[in-house]
Length: 331
Ligand code: NAD
Ligand code: TDX
Image 1 (cartoon, rainbow, N blue to C red):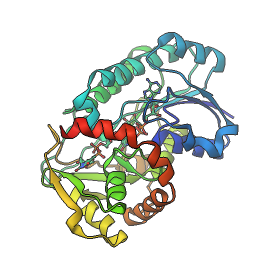
Image 2 (image 1 turned 45 degrees about the horizontal axis):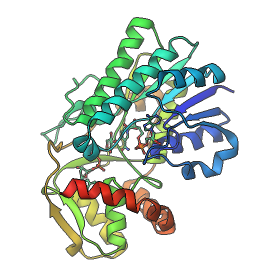
Image 3 (image 1 turned 60 degrees about the horizontal axis):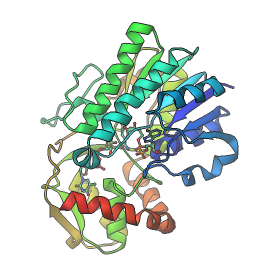
């Protein structure tokens, strides 16, 4: 079976991908430096079936060392700083990890007989949409608005350049907003669930009318695996669910499932440069690779709520780190 090197495999989406790849019989090598967002707890079910390197992708020599030892057939690159609010407060690490880190992986990969390099990008590289009838296609030009999305767009462009210039077999995937079990509780959906469970005010930025397209994390991991197995070299694939919601609607759905009052909703100051709307056209992955996400939004949300109720201990471990971060966001 192929040897798949997964960067960021201890993160939220990466860990779901690792579990799926192990299930399918791939030999998985995880490379992750375990930042605040990385946690091996997510991989406990497969810990005996993977190889793990606690390695920082911003260190070229260390990346070379891992490739030298493992000689991977495929690279799936999830590792990144991933939270927009943190990128607004401290952009430097986003450039370091997302741009330089990606550069290091591409640079080392071209010295090895890599069959595929799957570069995980995001819908945020397209910028924002204003009209409800518009959608981003793979041809839409990139207009990122936050330090996070511009660092991801840069990584995306480096992937393109390495394909065009060096014929490195790069494929780019642009997923929409993910949610599901094991998401770090800085992101919107776990914030809503955890605040609601504790009867605390739920912070909604601006007027709550921003819209996002939500994909269940297992579906996203399956989509990435499909691209890895069937995707065409040099191509870009949007990976969305079509489940587009206003933020306020997401909050109300969760409150209703939990039987909590809408009085918990608290409008707070808006995120600077807050993108209004993301929505992708995902016909290409559907038609060409025959992939469609399976999980309806409400079903995914129920599974996610169940996870957080059953894993409060895990959430508690993150409380101190989050307290410091939120102080900075709201100061
Ligand atoms: P995450 O923040 O949960 O996980 C990121 C992982 O990368 C962590 O395990 C962290 O330890 C690791 N990492 C960070 N810096 C590293 C470094 N220098 N060296 C090695 N490892 C490092 O992120 P996620 O939500 O799982 O997102 C995964 C990927 O998918 C990212 O590239 C992100 O941009 C992209 N993406 C995420 C979403 C989303 O909604 N979460 C949507 C679209 C695209
Ligand atoms: O407390 C909050 N209140 C709030 O109203 C938080 C954390 C968020 N929001 C809003 C901002 C967004 O409109 O909810 C929406 C979703 O916010 P995030 O969960 O921070 O996600 P977003 O900024 O949309 O980015 C996500 O999707 C694309 C991921 O974090 C990125 O990694 C991915 O590339």
